[in-house]
Length: 330
Image (cartoon, rainbow, N blue to C red):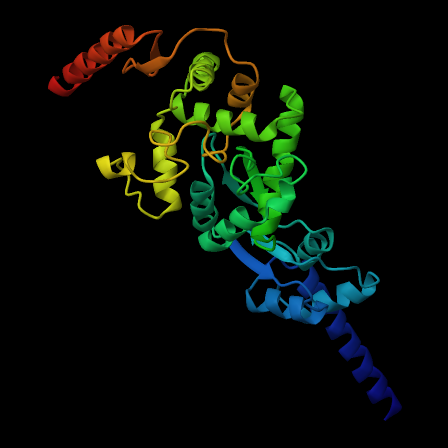
């Protein structure tokens, strides 16, 4: 009887070892990318079960055994991408070191907070309205730089970011503000943040040609000095966006719309930035070209023609319309 029990125990132990080895060493998982979100606060048991249910590992018990054999290392929550077959040991090591999946969020120069909010929602990193709420209200993030800032607009620096779905929209906004602080330091901006960033945001929207941004900035500074309205279309668009009335086209009613951001009707600078400028536009606003230009208009080739007088500007506008007509008639 004793020998029988001994043999049974031995057989069971061998079987357990074989099953454990199989569970640990036999690869499992998908051949195409699969994302699995392990929620913060999940226990090792919940993580093991989630992995097994998703087919990432063969046995949750083998995973837990390996976990206990390695001193119960902290397992890090987050979103993980599994795109090839792997052993339980390899999966465990990834989760123990927090090899989580990052979503790439590209914020181009000139994006405003509405554009960024839409990009965040498209990347499934958060809801558009949640980000806009933070961008509109969480000005404490920049209070030391710009106490009069009406929102975070202008300080959400354009760059390529890598976020996880466990990060909040506040975390994302804070990361963008940190990038702005570094960029401001790089270009030598250390005072007058409100005025410089507001001007840079206008310059950013008015031209995509880096080499002429300082001239564009000079036009607006010259107009301010002469108490002329800035009359910049991007500010009209921004006024419409703030009032949920922009549909992709500037209407005559928009040019007459009462808003401190409508620089056709309101003299001086708008109350704050209208976009998020990059380094080149910050540099242009900080160190504009020394010119006596008061006007500019597109040359229909990606640049602008600058003018000092109404007469020069009228001739440039005529040339632009002529070039535009030629393109339409081709």
